[in-house]
Image 1: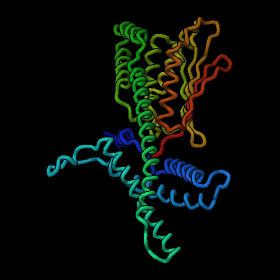
Image 2: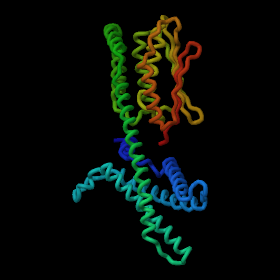
Image 3: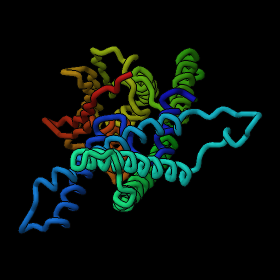
Image 4: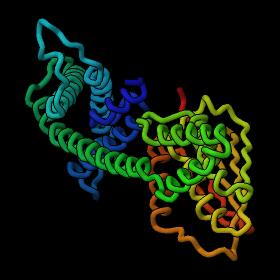
Length: 365
């Protein structure tokens, strides 16, 4: 398994957000601030709100939150690390269940709470009486108060995890359907073109078979970890070479590429469906055919892929049907998931041209 797919699997099996990064830690601190405000309101009321009390509560809650985040961050590296089989104790070779992971993290939060409560009590006793003592009952009160929101937050993380799993499963199902969807007319037309070429031009027929095999191999291959943009473009060019046998001079295509595609990773089948739709809906219905232009460039750290095809207004409408809209919706979801929200899919019609544009920030590493 590749490193990217292994990390993805570890993420899907771990329900607590990565608190080693700023985004997850910021969300946790925001919840801590709201919790501090709620406790202060309960103790002092709105009419006689005590900001000093709020500061004391917030200070302790923030220390508990930060120490808990540190413990959970360290535990994440251990709990998601590959577990090697051990002949001495085979139990350690088995992956931990979700329940065990939840219990371990819950205990770590309570441990962080106990440490912070003990330190707060010791400091309070020393500053007031000069005695380094801590009241066990006060520490127990703090533990009980922290246990309830800690359980609620962990439950919230778990529900979020289940929702992400469900969304991922839906995307995978739709992606599998997209991979399996080879238009029957495209396959039949390719076979007819191949049959007519065998006797006339054996070399071109052999090239067509290679393109067809390459296209099917690419569509059915496990590409869950993404592919290089070069591979995606190659699949599109193979598709266009096959369609050019049938449409001949009616299909004119142009590629304008100004980036190093080998270093850019994208989800599989993000460009090929757009090219196929352009041929099927824009060029094929026109009596004189049309043109297709694919531009790939980069500006200000963003990669832009633009697919432009001509449209014949007088040609019969070929149903930009719900299937096309579903494919575009699916593509938006896959782009958003793969590029972590840093991708857009835009569509517009300008001067009898249908333009589809994909903008995304390349992933680092």
